[in-house]
Length: 155
Image (cartoon, rainbow, N blue to C red; front, side, top):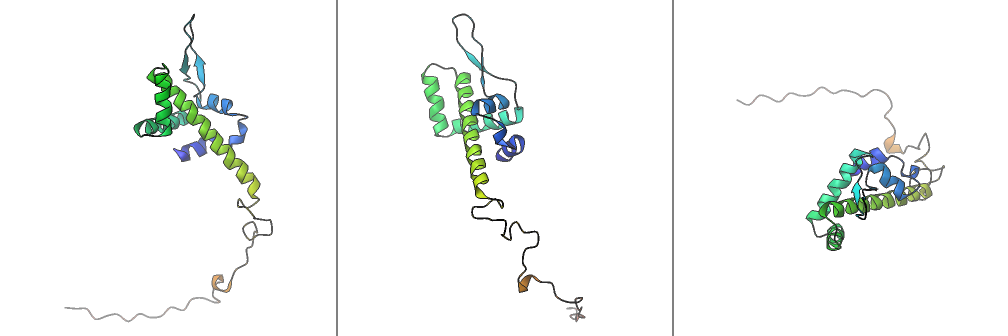
């Protein structure tokens, strides 16, 4: 799931806020109200692969006593149906994924050119020809092959 998120989302900074991200992944609620009945339903649009990953995350959260399970139970206690509570949980997970990926992107930008804190352009990490120690240098000349002595066959 994490790999799918990284591949499909690519650059999280292309989404200006969590609402745009939720709309893109299909977890933003759609108004399905009629008359005095105020309801929202889950969008069938958006990136279905990311939506599936979020659905699996929500399902796993519901199987175990986690914060997600407590959130789902609070939504059910407030009068939401199971489907509505699941929609709310998926949106909450979408917001958490967005927040984590944004914080990682900010940390990476602050890290430096090599991707690690303290890395400079003078570092061997970013140099095209890193220095080689004596143990890393190749041996001069071709390797010499030695004849192997065959062991006698055991009968």
